[in-house]
Length: 301
Image (cartoon, rainbow, N blue to C red; front, side, top):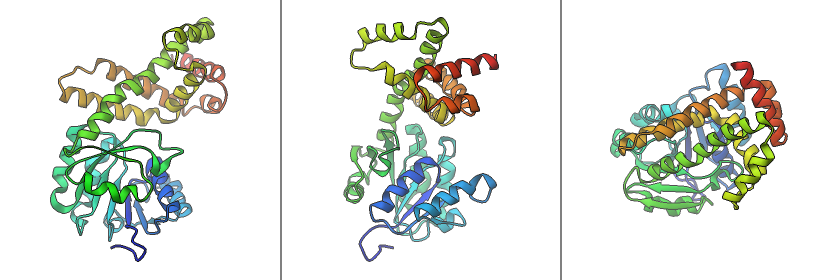
């Protein structure tokens, strides 16, 4: 149902970091009617998510069916492994053929499977978020793909969203996101491996200076702590995304040797990031972070 001010009604399935960030940006952009559902809501672990929804001004729904009631735009923002199930949970309850923005980091094949599952119950849009969700939130750069991507773009752009069209085929946006992640998340994993070893032998500055000769456009004094922090805070999620990257490569007939190794490094770092010693070092400089990570990894082994 369209509101009197002409703004669309939104629903979020999944209200973790990405969902909450996009919803908060949309609220500030003038969207008043937003509902959300997350499978964690009924659990103790979901109390923080529900508090976040109340703070932002988002209606905390009682179920997936309740969340999509009257929604014109449904945003699926769940974990990679749950993307198909999220669509399945709302499919019978969709009315009026809402836009279904699948922003999950999954393979092109998974997005095509999701579009097929929804059928004509929704106008499915394959969405790839191409930058950190903070601080840009709903204005993070996004690629759209699918038969309805071109028609949806003006509506989303009018809300301040930074939209580009990847193509008319579902999976085109996901393909770009997945393939680029081989490099983006792979470099993060290599950063950890390279500079952890450098710290242990006492040559961090020397290695950084040497890399500057090969990559003059990169400031390693900033890149190292940035990459380590992202892995420590989001390693588990990024590992799950890299498993989808590996699936994408297999779909393309490319053996995902490096992608699978990146999964392991990202997951290891995500686990280390839960430790108080590592978490406490994340707001410090690169040397402090490396020291904390080095000590934590020695303790593990």
